[in-house]
Length: 427
Image 1: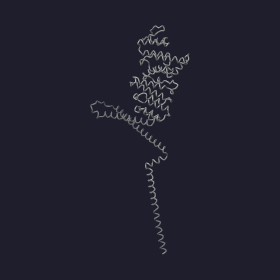
Image 2: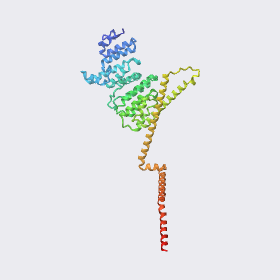
Image 3: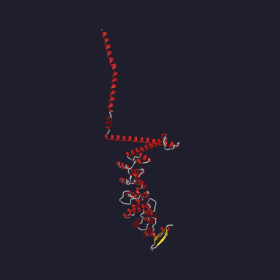
Image 4: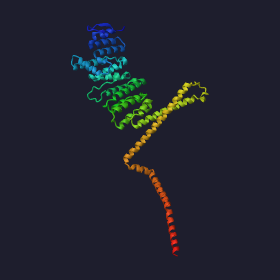
């Protein structure tokens, strides 16, 4: 069993097991705790064990450091109300404890868990610790930001001048600090932080007071290669558009430029294609990107099936014959992909028709009612229509003339006949 030496008030060293260390009354005074801890450090104890001692001791004095719920601020205020001393004295005492704990944290990277450091940073910001201690805590958190959880990262803004509910500027400093460390060279660590930032952006975007500049700065803090998929970023942008319905069109375009449509999954692309909050150009880019991915997949499947054809089997490369079940699955997959391509093509055509219709309507509204007349005149349709009408009138005139001509020709003959008979009778 691991045992420790601690300094008693008389100055002598005493050996105690680990269980007795946490319950000893000597830790009721932080000065004696720091002295005892310095003795333990001198015995070359592992930094992880020293960190566990510090975290356990800190949770004894500051209960909200050991809490797992989200309402840390209310727990701290409740603890202050239960304290018999004044609120100012309690806050001063907590400030002294946090600053003392920051001073005795081992310099090794993984000696203290990142979530505990974030809780300590939250309490430190609440009780207004000195800037030097706050910067030290932020630096330690930046080293291990890939190990942080979203719950602990959602630190509220305790400043009276802040407009947002969450301390977005603090998180931005942590991300920039992480980028400058050696840990950022690891691809896995950067991808973890990018996923964490996308989740944080989705939570912060609900705040209607979050400005576009703050959102863009936090979204662009990490390089583009840190996100293998942009589904989380798309979700955050969609949440921001929901919370800011009056956002101008140009600013919506700026947000959508952050999304790489080639990195969206099929589900995210389908949601984006039906999303009315996105600009039309962004929707068309998503549809075209999805169509390109499907066509490439279909070509790859075709080339794979061609490679497995009987002509390819004549090569010396050893191949395995597909079973009937595998062939049916492959054919069903190709059929489904072709149907998806046709569906996307029809959606693109319908979208283009809608855009053309909108453009024609806007031109009509700008030019007035006479625009339709002039557009038809330019096409020569009115001229052809008039010609057809003139032709119809000429044909109708000829028909009428033909219908009237026979009676006119018969009448003179009748008169001539009557006059000749009269002359004959008179003679």
